[in-house]
Amino acid sequence: MCASSRVCKMATINTSEENTLLDNQSSSSTDIKPPYLINSEPYSVAKQLLSKIDKCSSSSQRESLNSITSEKISLMTASEQSSVVQPLLTDLYQISMAYAYWKANKHQEMATFDLYFRKNPFGGEYTLFAGLEECLKFIRDYKFHPTDIDYLRTVLPTYTEQEYYDYLLQLDMNNIKIYAVPEGTVVFPRIPLLRIEGPILKTQLLETTLLTLVNYASLVATNAARFRSAIGTEKALLEFGLRRAQGPDGGLSASKYCYLGGFDGTSNVLAGKLYGIPIKGTHAHAYVSSYESMDDLTERELCDRKSGERRPFADLCLKYLNELGPILKILPEQTNKGELAAFTSYALAFPTNFLALVDTYEVLKSGLPNFLAVARALHECKYQAVGLRLDSGDLAYLSLEVRAKFREAATKFNIDYFKDFNIVASNDINEETLVSLEKQGHSIDTFGIGTHLVTCQKQPALGCVYKLVELDSSPRIKVSQDIEKVTIPGRKNLYRIFGHDGKALCDLLTKYDEPVPQPSVKILSRHPFSDQRRAYVTPTSVESLYKLYWADGEIKEQLPSLKDVREYAKDQLNQLRKDHIRDLNPTPYKVSVTEALFTFMHELWMKNIPIGELD
Ligand SMILES: Nc1ncnc2c1ncn2[C@@H]1O[C@H](COP(=O)(O)OP(=O)(O)OP(=O)(O)O)[C@@H](O)[C@H]1O
Ligand SMILES: O=P(O)(O)OC[C@H]1O[C@H](OP(=O)(O)OP(=O)(O)O)[C@H](O)[C@@H]1O
Ligand SMILES: O=C(O)c1cccnc1
Ligand SMILES: [Mg+2]
Image 1 (cartoon, rainbow, N blue to C red):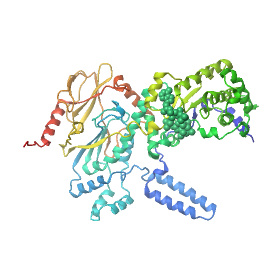
Image 2 (image 1 turned 45 degrees about the vertical axis):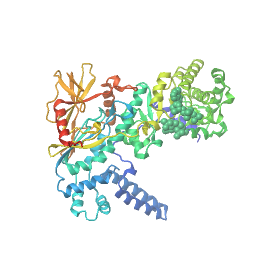
Image 3 (image 1 turned 30 degrees about the vertical axis):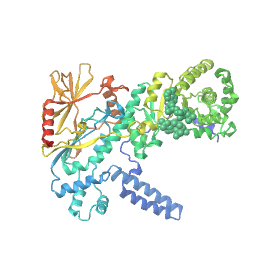
Image 4 (image 1 turned 180 degrees about the horizontal axis):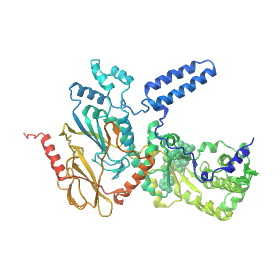
């Protein structure tokens, strides 16, 4: 049976499949876990089974064990600690401190920790907060596994008391509280993104894992938002970074949080399955260079989409390439025929989704004419090509040239949609490239971006920290020579103050028991560290930013879908004045404290700094 008869079945294909990049969305499912993230104990059981399979002599035995093992792995992933995010994903010193708190019988003292950062990333003046849902799931599922305890026994000093291990084994996070700003909120230096309250042993144990869950998520979401802001809302942005990301988990997190930050899709198939993100893709240079000439084609016919009649598709491609010579002012015999064969076979495989990578040999003299020839032949068979991808050269110039040729071909062939083919661009694109392309003028519709986006090459880490601010109702301060590093002590509340234009004016931190700022009531807002910097503000409206997300052993808020968080983040960015967002020298957004908090903090500061003596 030739391909054409298979393709004929596509004549009934749903028209909604047309005019997309290669696209294979699956339904959203946030709870499926990738098998490589299963924890060590079930994994080792699975490994034992796998080694049994290897030793099996008969293939039927092997098959049956294989199916049992996959079932077991999927059952384990559903019922055990199924994620790499688990209590041992922490720094040793947390577990050491927990022991020392326990030994000193201090472990039940009630602590408050703030999680915050001190400087916005990428030289900007805003950050998108991300990672909260993962933090809450980590806290919900917090449980040491017996094998975790066995492992700790081998690494902690032998005199570590057995009762401590018993204590860890039954530990859960049921009597702690988490207040946080919603995921996707625009946040600023010094505002606590999470406030964690509870016995010090437990709240201390959470530090590293919460930081690792928030830091990269917020960094890459912010990076994505900056790329989006550089190119505007009209163009499509696709994340292509998996191959360049910092390992598999970095790649998955990047896909998830770039979507949150405003990207439209990802090439990462697992991210599509796990998070319901639209997945998109084209093809690689390897596909093009795998063909040398039209003789390599094993299939040459395509059935007409409407009539089902068999058409000599490869010959049509060659015929239209010749017609394109005078239209494009190129020599048809000079285009690379291996490339034409590759495009022809790709179109035979995906007649409703044909998008060609055109820079393997020469964009204007080979890739473009070959693409248009195949697109014209597809049209003849009642299919519509999607577009092409540029992956090298001057992307602005090439996109404009290509668009001009699309227009000429549309006129000459009298096929209107030819002028609107999708131009995808990729190749080491960063935020500055996007800003520059916008200034130069271009005709790119879709950007595929990998390395700079997912590795956050411009700034590879966000510096969130986790600081103790209160213990047993007594405020704690961490003093530093570097004024920016002094902590703001005590439990605090956080409000966003809006002005008459509906834009955010400043964020205000208050002492926990201060009254909520009211619209139309003037308040004095003060810079937390600088005496002179203060201003009166009369809010038009006030938003209380914290919600209680975890208490009484349960997640207290309905968690929005990733798509809803993405929409919320977009609205959040619209609440900021443009000058806070611009790429060059943006205006800092004010984070201030009330008079009462200022005084409280500075008195404590003075109390904690020893007075020196000159000699
Ligand atoms: N019009 C443009 N303005 C600014 N930057 C651009 C423009 N077009 C492309 N770029 C960027 O310039 C860089 C060009 O990369 P490079 O010098 O490696 O060239 P290349 O086209 O990949 O060449 P080659 O294929 O020969 O290696 C990429 O980072 C790309 O994103
Ligand atoms: O440049 P980035 O922003 O990192 O985007 C991802 C890159 O990955 C691919 O290149 P690669 O050379 O790996 O494969 P290809 O043959 O598909 O071009 C793609 O063509 C992009 O150039
Ligand atoms: O689909 C693509 O074009 C793609 C995917 C990953 C990396 N580079 C390109
Ligand atoms: Mg490439």
